[in-house]
Length: 405
Ligand SMILES: Cc1cc2nc3c(=O)[nH]c(=O)nc-3n(C[C@H](O)[C@H](O)[C@H](O)COP(=O)(O)OP(=O)(O)OC[C@H]3O[C@@H](n4cnc5c(N)ncnc54)[C@H](O)[C@@H]3O)c2cc1C
Figure 1 (cartoon, rainbow, N blue to C red):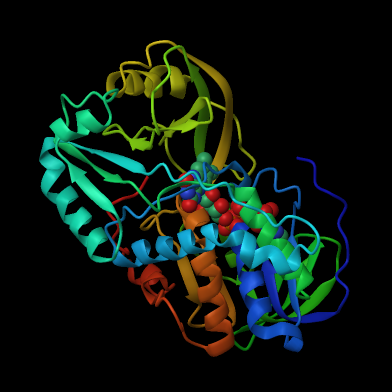
Figure 2 (cartoon, helix red, strand yellow; figure 1 turned 30 degrees about the horizontal axis):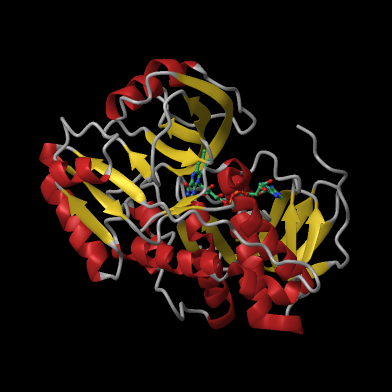
């Protein structure tokens, strides 16, 4: 793995040190910088600023309103607001240059639903609509009418979000937040945090790969799939590990007419358009914690598992050619597939912002704002994200979300 040459931070200590400077770390840095201005010193330590192996860069970058838990719906609604307004929000930090447009493809999501799952799917649609989402439930007839290329024979229907769902540019989001944070006084340093000093129930200093020790007021763990490595440096434990996900881009001899949504099949396989091509993936059969540096590809996942599911659901996908593929890591929360956000109760200046599993990119705007609120005000000011608090982990009380991909 190519790591850029490491550098030394400008100061001996900072009010806030953020470990990890990808989407979540940079969103936190952005919101903190806007809230605190020059009144606080903020350092982001990033071990690989090429971001080559970060979840953010390897993400399939979609956003949806179709969740079963109201908080997740509201978090994504804020995500859409930020994505849509990103060029205007970023403009002051891109003086003289075009501010990043995140290329939001608002094609929607289509969740296929088994006959047995209709009642629960309708309940989720009702909940989402009560919160202002545009999801509708379509029975097989209307579903076929709307999407003639879909095999509905074994379906009880599908829930379709026609607005405020789709996909966008993950690196544009990261780069915008990072640039805005730096322009507002946040320091980014190419280095790795290799240890933490804890005294009197607080992190007092962070050790860097280059040998320096920097004092730290608040320490934020935004290290993605490596979050447990950082937690362990403070003697803490979270059930977050890298889980491999294989993504495949393919061409089809037969095109799919119209705006294709992100289709979530009963098998768990998802597929969406990607320009003239298509993007697909699924949870691998041998799912489980992987080594931090294991990005080996398993092509048989496409041939043996994904392609048969695609062909069944969309019969036009009878002649496909894989054009590109990659392996990325989910920062997987093994307790309940949802983020951990908030301070540790005993190491009281250690802030968690990780474990988002397959939906951390769309949640990064709201999480960044929420973490900033906790640090600046000591309490959430907008969305109350306390159900994502660390306290549920030792209590073994999973946060309940039915719609996990
Ligand atoms: C294949 C795939 C598909 C996905 N699809 C979606 C999707 O459709 N929608 C969605 O919302 N989310 C999706 N996700 C999840 C989403 O991409 C992640 O939840 C999100 O990007 C996490 O961002 P992060 O900044 O926390 O982690 P990362 O992007 O992994 O960043 C963590 C950073 O911390 C750095 N770091 C780690 N340890 C240290 C250390 N000790 N010192 C210094 N730096 C350190 C790393 O180098 C890295 O840059 C997907 C993920 C994958 C892999």
